[in-house]
Amino acid sequence: MKHFIVSITALAAMCVFVSGQNVLSGTVVNAKTQKPLAAASVQELEGKSGTYTGKDGYFSLKVPQLPAEIRVSHIGYAEQTLVSDSTELLVALRPIVLHADEVFVTAQRAIDGKTPVAYSELEREDIDVLYHQQDVPLVLDMEPGVYALTQTRGTEAVIPT
Image 1 (tube, rainbow, N blue to C red):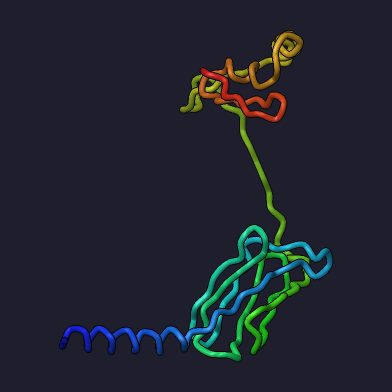
Image 2: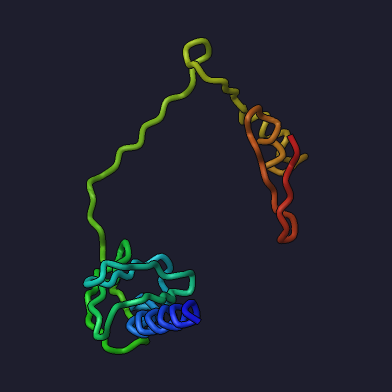
């Protein structure tokens, strides 16, 4: 009987704790196109909890109380902070241009006898001859260390090496 009373008390305390939790859910979309935004960050500022949107832009977040202050952000979009007393939201983020310094990309060819990596050169003439006989992935698959895939009628086929 004593265990029964302790169990009922614990269950009642849990119910009170769970009922104190509110679930805030909604969808994050691009303000211009109204298309859902995947992987947008949704943070509840007071309780320090957060989540990310799924592929369909949907999120669900437990908040300690309503109204809740949340911050929604995504790379390439203006961050939005809002206070909501509703449990269902539609958040539209405005696209912005990110300014960054220019990036320089450089490359060097491997030099036989000097570069400490295995490499092979595929000449244009070889490609011209083989390309008429085989698909490009099959031509590239002949090179050491290359793993090639090809698509055939919507299905992917792995080419054994």
